[in-house]
Image (cartoon, rainbow, N blue to C red; front, top):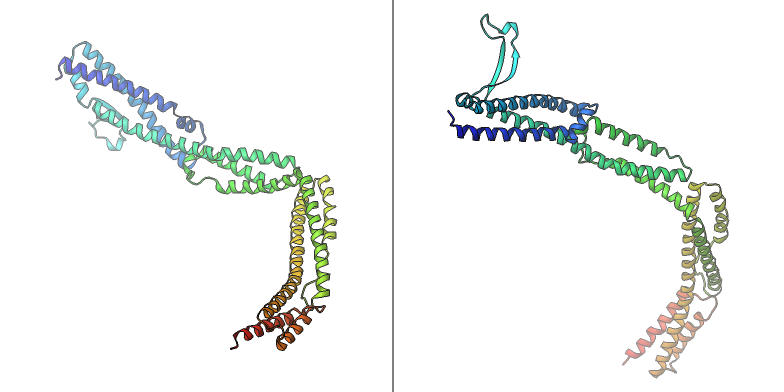
Length: 390
């Protein structure tokens, strides 16, 4: 049997424990997961787990009330100094739980009609702790799943509103936006009805990707609308470059055709006029609000004008390259002749003949560049042979 001091200390521990239980149960009731689960129309896995947890909560509160009554009874016993009864209350299995009516077929004539599970106060507390842990795990899981899902879809819904506003500003009804809106609503509904069934480790990436695609499409159209004047000016300037490069290439082409035999240069196709014709059609598309057609027209015209400029510059480079090659061969021939003179071969008849042939090919219009190259090389080789001769 407890002494009065032992009983007093035990009762203080029991009373403090009961107060902590009360605080924990109030916090459990106020938990965000509890508010979510008890107010939602649940389905699936979440419904199953909440059904189990809510039943446990009911039992837990009942057990807490039993614990409270036992604490009050113990205080009364201590006040009356009934230490024997108090010791029994604190140590023996005096708490009756889970009273169940026995079915008639399981009862004997003189046996009990009820089955009662009797435990000690310590065992009661352990059962309550186990139940509390199981309940709060469900509450936390639901709250975490819900919070994570909402954190994932809230930015998508914000982006959806922004993209929808962009579409409205362009006067465009994009069916993809309605589809995305329905998918997000479905995800939110599932997050409310069965949050534990959602794999929160896998965010709705497909929806995010679809939304990004729509944003990109509409931004392309918006850019065509908003930057139209600037892009038109840039294209106009680009066409000016194309025209200048085309004229230079044409001059070079004509010169090459006159001065170089069989140059193999393709004739440059007139590109500026067709490009300008396409350019003058674009303002009408802008005025009509045909943003898709406008964006495509701008992009294709920018691309084709850039390509035409590159083609004209390539043609110019090829043409001037042939003329530069002829000039290079002329320079080499004269350099070799000067070298021959320095070496004392100014009167060499063989070298003079080779020089005459090479000079004739190089200064004939049109010039046969392959033949000129061979002639210069023959002169160079002959000079080299003269230097090597004993």
